[in-house]
Picture 1 (tube, rainbow, N blue to C red):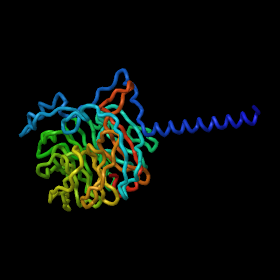
Picture 2: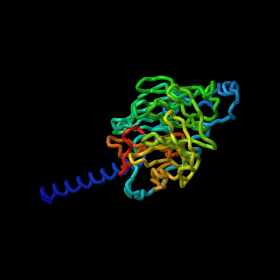
Picture 3: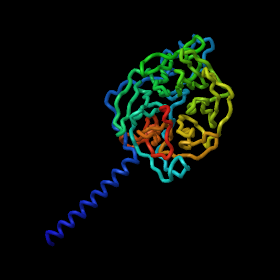
Picture 4: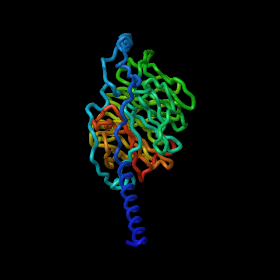
Length: 371
């Protein structure tokens, strides 16, 4: 064999090898790796109020003590229950929203109950609250994590207002809503003169308005005004995810297998409760909104997409059971997903873990507010 022939053979082998490597990298992007082995002496996880040894004594002092609740997840239930594992999925076209055939790309994961209200950052990164470690992690555009905030008292969901004020709900004993940025301060930790814990349940999700107030869910629906005074709204609600419309004139909140809507008044009060849409599956959880006012709500089916007129537009299926979603990226045309569960180092399913995935969109997130 001549030197030229050897060279050609070598080049063909190199190209083939690169093709194999490229395919492997692409596969790795759409397949989550296993969790690393747990450290030998892991730190003690932060606990939500119902699991704190002092919870019984605290609620015994309430005027009307709430019913006993337990578990790790918001609302008292164990987050995720039994591991559900990876799901097969096929993305179909939703006109103006997403192309057919899209694939979710793995971004990041960690063991522990890691929040449910994710927020896209101005620089294209993502903020993720970590319930178990009482931290907020910032994921850069390359997926590299760093700690943005610490000591969040079992902080579990985030929201940023149109003015850039960042808030978090904190689920440890003596639950509260705290502002993290531009300065750190307590917004509220009480309801009708008692600890917020007396309202019952576990504080869950939130959406911040441009007035300096925060709507949040805790079994029911509440509004903490800019002075921290809390008012309860709604009837017959089983709440979880919550989001304001782009113009902040409508508030949407999940209510089991439906989405409820309220009219927002100038002082932040709520009127005209109504059913806005029925989901295709139960378990309405996190929510976000795009520049056209379309709503994106996570359920057992994936991410359900609803038009601003209440028309159900379709479902974006997901690789795992889903917790929350948010638009992000420098152009806000990437949808991020916080999914439930992972595989440990031996390949076993772990329910108490969270993963972040992303998918390119035709739709663009609302640029006037982080979420």
